[in-house]
Length: 217
Image (cartoon, rainbow, N blue to C red; front, side, top):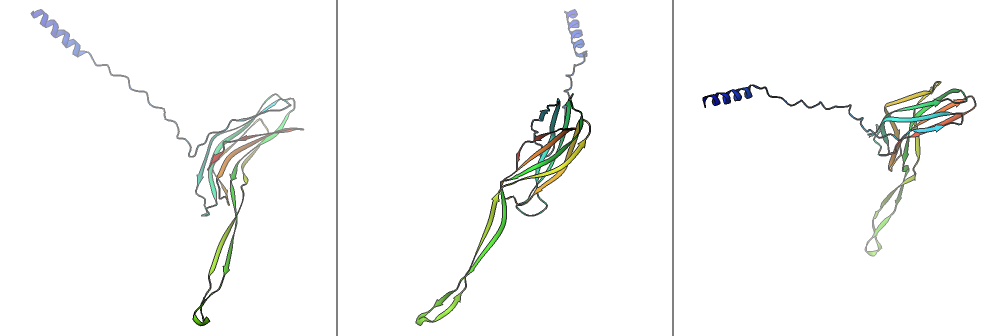
């Protein structure tokens, strides 16, 4: 019995002497840069194959569009803070040599209703108070006023932002913190980016446009 008790104590002591195995630490979370304020998804790229064998691509990425308070106090003013990266590339092995091209970037603002001039109309009358024995008392002069607002159908305004001419096969225009503005809009408004790529040879020019997603603001 004494031998068994010693063996039990020895086994227990050896068990407590073994170090505890700690679980592995969790992997750190990957934290990327915060999304841009007013970030919007970009539309599919534009693609065109020319008869000479060149392939044109124009695209937009990292776009942002945010409605901001206008610098004026007019209720009919609209102002937006926009940004994005727009690229145009020409690839392939065309039969005609390229002579250059350009990339034009801008925004389209659509306004549902345009407010016109305000017209004021006023009329002045005379209402005499006739008392007993046909005696005319005080005479009242009422003034009636009316206002008329002339509304016109909405329009689309193009706001060019930047243009890059190039002689190689690739061009890029990056827009950051640019403010676009339109006045006289009393209805719902719409905002859309665009980028137009032009590639030229000695005798031809091919034009391709990227049209971004339409944002209702």
